[in-house]
Length: 472
Figure 1 (tube, one colour):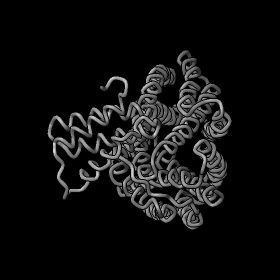
Figure 2 (spheres, rainbow, N blue to C red):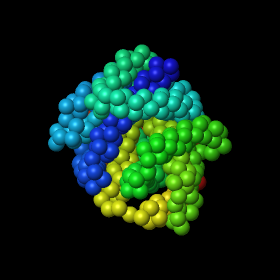
Figure 3 (cartoon, rainbow, N blue to C red):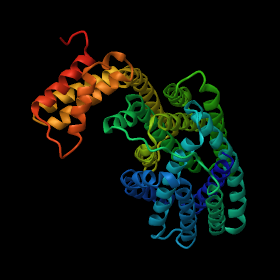
């Protein structure tokens, strides 16, 4: 894990250099109205290429899952090249496609990090702790990097800050090549079982909770930036707000590790949604700068606690062959939610109390809906993961296939139902199992003939295994 920690920390530090450089050039060096236009244009254009992440990047990551460290190194190098390209395009039209490319590659790099961590951790229950440990170390180095970048941009300008970020990305590309994940064993899985693992109700509901968190984060970041600037707050207030957010994020990483032994991942996401809600509700009545700082810390806490919990949940249940697709799909949704929040906060200048009302309307109803949906999802998951429930579903599929004349499919579904029952019960290991295996071998051989009698026999055997007390 040491090379992985070092590479991730170098990448996070480089991200801090890029963020400081872009903030200094896009936000602070032009008028407030112009900065709104620049930021809004960036956010709106950002939404378009994110559709590339799920259909293209996810499958590409899965395709090269046996060589993830080389893929990760390539992404770090691509981010470095984007930084160098940004040097000559700041405040020009060409800036936007390069910034978008950098965004896509950065998100893809995060997906590869997920797959690498999954390959470095043997115990699934330790995934959340591993993710949190990586993030804590990266947050410390990013904070140091942000301070260094502020000093550098003040002395030399945003161009040299971007060049320094490019060098850090190159260093991360070299270090990540030393990561040695355990060999991945290719396991043949049924499509239905793969779908069940990556679309478990608890995962889908948890992703909805994360969408609420990310939308709130996007809205808050741009709200506080424009609010402080509109009120002509001194520069150090921005730094205090960023420090509060970073402190809250660090506490969120630590809390994820400490609370994992007591709470499930989906419960941690509920905590992440609830944490800032009480203070944003108070802010509806009136907001002071100290209260904004507290909310900034809680928003940072919410972001990292929820993200660590969700990443661990996906890493635990997703098969190796589908982790890239799952990560890309959910990352696209989360990033779009963040962009939506930012777009909501950018075009018009809202009173800060109204902004707190918007945040409360994101957090509180989101929490209530999430708690109810999470409870229902947990009940559905028990049924979905029960071999008897899965076997019953396959039996239904077999009978439907028999009705429409898909004889081979009926045999295969019936045999799969029996296999699921046999994994947890000896009831399936009867004399009929041998004849079922013979029929299945014929069904899986295109050159063999499968008649209706074979399909009926297979479905009958499956029916007796799945429902031994009701089937005569």
